[in-house]
Image (cartoon, rainbow, N blue to C red; front, side, top):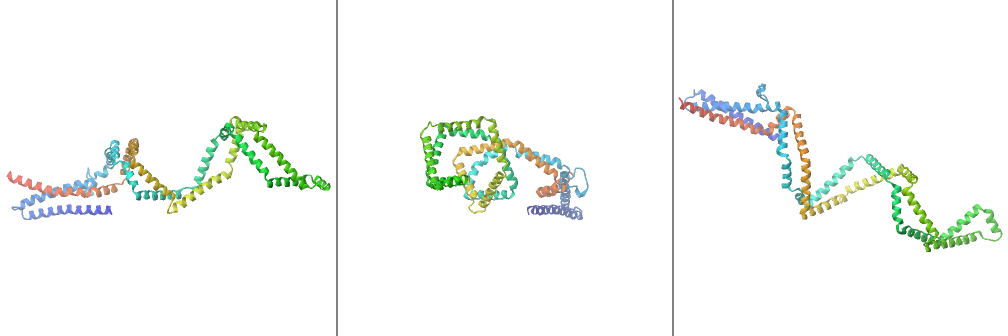
Length: 426
């Protein structure tokens, strides 16, 4: 619509300038029909000079864009003939006048981006808008994501990290920490108590007795039969054996628990210390652990687990984005409000943000200037001549028609002046 309005305005001005030329021609013809008698000599002088001025300025205006009347007169169609030079000069003008580093930094200082941002975010409707935009962007991003490629990328990243991870060394360091100050003995005490309590349970003792009778019956059927023959009950004997076994085991466990210097505790210490040392310094042991780690990384269950994590995450995110009370939306709104409050109440923070923006602009300005200038020059060079002429004429052609109007009127006035001078010199 804007292009159509400009074209209509340009057309009206062309008709107006042409009408003045026609009017000057009509006046000239009328004055000549009166043989320039009396005042008609003045009319004739005005009209003749007005036509000359109108035609000269029409030629000048048309010559900017095309060959007048299609005749390839030298130094006409100036704009298309010099398109490359115009493109370069326009790019240099924009670069030097509008994109200078000092000018851009001055604009940042005057604009105060941090202050304006705090005011904008402080408006609840703007924070809500930001939240909606975040939800929309996240939803669109999910639709474009290639799930298979993301899953492969996650799995490969996990595998690379795991392959570089010194599992044996890390386990050794962790165990060293856990065994410092005899902490592992506390774990041993807790284990002994749990085991003793478990053996004291009646159902456990009955289970052991049943298992003893079952194994004895399977392994030594003749012996069990002989016990029955001599009047002994195998089940009762199993219960007594299990009870004796539990008593003996509990006595042993309590001995270990109550004696800090018990041989089993020392053996446990030696075993733990030896295991930690092997983890840290035994190349063969570390190699075996690394081999088990690689085997685990190659298992399909790991890839399935990673894929499942991604599927669960995307499913949750899709569901969240579809809810009116989206967690992402709520979080963005909350963060925006908090950030706006921090900016509004902390001049140092605003100053720091503005300073960082200025520093970033100073670093980017040279490349930005050259990039935009190159883009302008390349774009203009790529325009075909008809497009270049049309766009420029639509934007400045209406104003150029005033040159024709002024040429007609000023030319007429000059004609009157020349006629007056000629009369004075006769």
